Amino acid sequence: MKATARAHTNIALIKYWGKADAKLRLPLMSSLSMTLDKFYTDTSIEKSSENTEFYLNNQKQDTESTNRVINYVRRLQNEFGFSDKLIIKSTNHVPTAAGLASSSSAFAALAGAFNKFYDLNLSDRELSRLARIGSGSASRSIFGGFAVWQKGHDDLSSFAYSLDENPQMDLSLLAVELNCQKKKVSSTLGMKQAQTSPFFDTWINRNDYELEEMITAIKSNDFTKLGELAELNASEMHALNFTAQPGFTYFEPDTIKAIKLVQDLRQKGIECYYTIDAGPNIKILTQLRNIKDIEKIFESEFNNVKIIKASFGPGLSYLD
Image 1 (cartoon, helix red, strand yellow):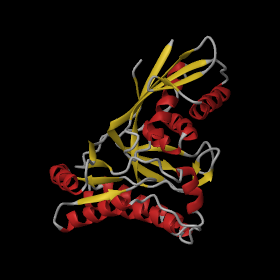
Image 2 (tube, helix red, strand yellow):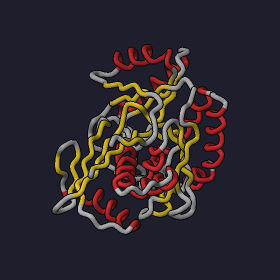
Image 3 (cartoon, helix red, strand yellow):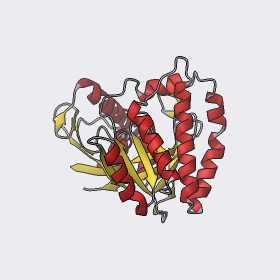
Image 4 (cartoon, helix red, strand yellow):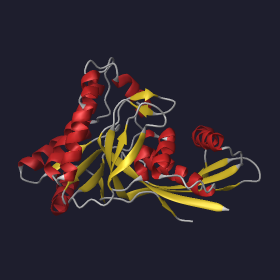
């Protein structure tokens, strides 16, 4: 028997940056994301006659990568009363340098494959909770379109839900690869260190307001308001990093150049906004009519830049 699930990665427009419980991956704030069509992970599970093994892109993984996946699966097995040895195979269609959280699609697909393999028939809410235990952002990749991850207060109450599975908003995302180097500060460490910023409490206190404003913008199909909020929220997140004790940043010189370029484009009447996660690469939020102009200008300003265009993606699906 074999079960395969597909999940798409997502980009947070209202960011998750701070953990209340690292073991359970409970966040200190709620978040909202856009699921993307171009980036996804396919994961299959089947029984093994020997040991549990993990393969990524047809390559058996080293101990560190294998342990995170296997420990996660064993945790799920313990919760539901299973003990089989398994072969887990994932194919990742997320560019490693694009600044997109491949763990979001990876653990959402793994949770889905586990559900299918054991015929658990779990609800999307329960799948979201299980995916969250593997990677916080994975909770949102169970859903397509726009999804909200409510922070909750414990394991059972922290899960994502669909805000709009099939949005009609004219919204495209351009993932701009500026730097392919491995980041020096992991997301886990960055979240912890950011809490030493004197502005961290302000960040937490603004979360409910910014989330509700973003939900209103989406429901009213207001692209401008969505873009302004996403850019503000990302800037606030990175301001925490700058003002942490000690301070740090994921930005590289080209990151600053790209931010300035987005701002210049807006002044010229090409409406676009940036968002940036824990890395140097930016994502540009814009409308369909502006994509070619933005691509042309970025390609003229950066040598060998890679730009990947994406739109709304679907939620979790099963391939077999």
